[in-house]
Length: 137
Image 1 (cartoon, rainbow, N blue to C red):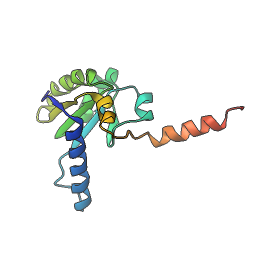
Image 2 (cartoon, rainbow, N blue to C red; image 1 turned 135 degrees about the vertical axis):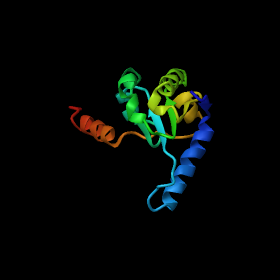
Image 3 (cartoon, rainbow, N blue to C red; image 1 turned 180 degrees about the vertical axis):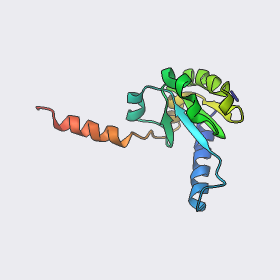
């Protein structure tokens, strides 16, 4: 594990990556940032950081190989505590030995306190709408 990243710094990285991607035709020079949300799937679907992916903590040891080859990995949890453990686990995996692995300092709570929004999973929104329309009242 390479430490923690503050929400402001992560927001800057995301913005820089988005600008670089928009300016490149093939994205070949873009470094690969992977944001790994370790909360359960339901929490992730309700709202997560932009460009993040869900790998719930209990599944992490079986799915860590999915992160192989990433240049930079940031783990995310509600308060920034469990994500430190996840970052240590990911950092100890041979396939991520060359990656910079960090935990989001303060977690999703700190991300939102900085005035940043979470993105719901589009399918989760549709499911919520369907459930609401089935209500008898």
